[in-house]
Image: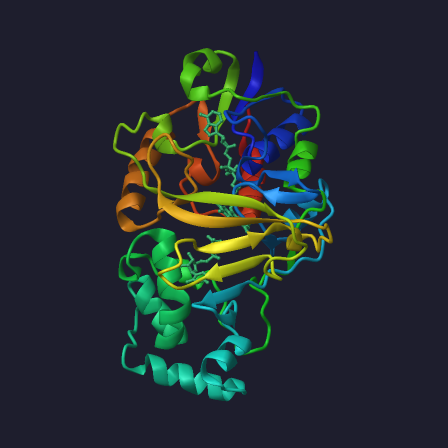
Length: 365
Ligand code: FAD
Ligand code: UDP
């Protein structure tokens, strides 16, 4: 018998377990995979930390979260500045003066601003209702067509006019020559990998791998006073109201016998024809100088029950369905739902840490 059973050893579960253990509660973490860390898991191949479930760059404006993460890892000075490859044309991301210069030959912010203004004029809408309208409002038609439309439709498997506008507002648009992908005050990659960081969070806390809580739910509920569930909320309820939709990412990872394949950690393929969305070259997250390199091509596919869910599809239909599951979840007295899958939210790592810290503060037995 333990005080708290924590289902899932991702960042939410690991932070929550750490906090509650430090408050004197006994915790047991269950994980259905054969490793800890959830989607931030990294595995060493050829001396390189490979991000097994997609590139993860830690970034935050929240000083408390930055300090908290710093207790478990030293962060390097990596700054994300992806490259967009549109049919072999190379553009700087996010949208900044380098991008505008390459696209239109403009040199000053004033010229860039005028060109964006000219490009969006004919299709400007006061209140953008979808991603396409929002993107054209922000950067005009050329950039929408070359750098956004193809990538977004590959990534989400839906036309841009059927996707929520907020997705594209995640990206900065800058009239400066600053190609830092994030506006965050703090950014970096944990030296030695994310798995090591999560291992440190879980130090001294029992973790049972290869164990699916849902397969023996009654047994496990009897082992704990309270359960924290960070798996998919719809799976918890046996998909009784229907399945929430996710996007899944399929990775094709290769070790190459060369020191440097693409010269950057992240290259986005923004045309519709290239079947993958991006190629990650993992060593560049750590300024690696190994003789070999490891790359992963990312293919975005529609998720099916039984597969790994990655991105929640936060459109109207799914948000409404989630709200119904939420109402059921609120009635579960013994169980608290948390994290990206438990709350069906497009959470970044720092937000998940903040949410887990807050949940721990509120939890009393
Ligand atoms: P997860 O990491 O999904 O952990 C949930 C855990 O629960 C998993 O280990 C799962 O196996 C386990 N589990 C589920 N069901 C059960 C069950 N029934 N029994 C036992 N165990 C179960 N964030 C950033 O800040 N920067 C980035 O660059 C970034 N890049 C991303 C790229 C991709 C491709 C994706 C998908 C996400 C990215 N994120 C990024 C977001 C980041 O991955 C999440 O915010 C974070 O990992 C969520 O942690 P979590 O604990 O909520 O969920
Ligand atoms: N996006 C795009 N072109 C790019 C990169 C991103 O159109 O080269 C769009 C795409 O719709 C994506 C959104 O911007 O879903 C947010 O990008 P971000 O990198 O934040 O997505 P993540 O992979 O972190 O979820």
